[in-house]
Image (cartoon, rainbow, N blue to C red; front, top):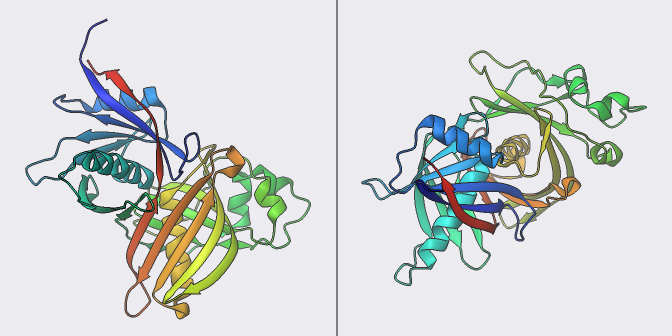
Length: 314
């Protein structure tokens, strides 16, 4: 068989070992000029939640990425940026002349600054955001049709009648359901459809998912309030092993709801263990001086390289 080939790498993001975390494929386009249809077909072939197409640096020296799910292109997603950062920094470290620990990646959502900590092997990214808490909360009547375990429960004691609905950016929205007091329900969650949420004017259409969470611990480290949580994200009849945008939405809400504790909040999020894909996500939220809006969100995590090879692109 002959034909044009492009190099690819797969990684498990938000994990320090292979076969955990959230899988990601990165196709290095090189000199190939791939059409939208070709990129969509390749993403469908990998069938991961996202596939990245990494283009050579433009005139500004910044690598450029396109992010595709098996069915559509996305302007931005968290775990593809973290995974791409790990690949770029690995290639930089392979060059003895380079000691850079900071880069900027160009995405459809704009430039994204990333950094690498060689000691902890963590890549961090400043996340584009437009945090919006919707006026209408998600009542149980909207959550129950999306979760069979809650529908079948003998009682819902300890579950709030309504949960906050937060958009990280226009087009990405989560209901945040606190199951801290109901470990039995949290453990028994199953994949289900996306919830039908009532969003404020100007915020539709949007992807909608449910972030179920349990607060495990909170403490102070200097001027930072630290939160440790377990989460599960369910939407479109699937469960996500590691959801960066959901973690950022949850972090923004927790920081704003607890602004009296200070401007800086760090979340250590555990996700995916129920699927056998244990993931660890770090989200840092900084509020503005007035502590009534989100100034900055940083997403961070490790990644494990799984495979490398060639894919036909002709």
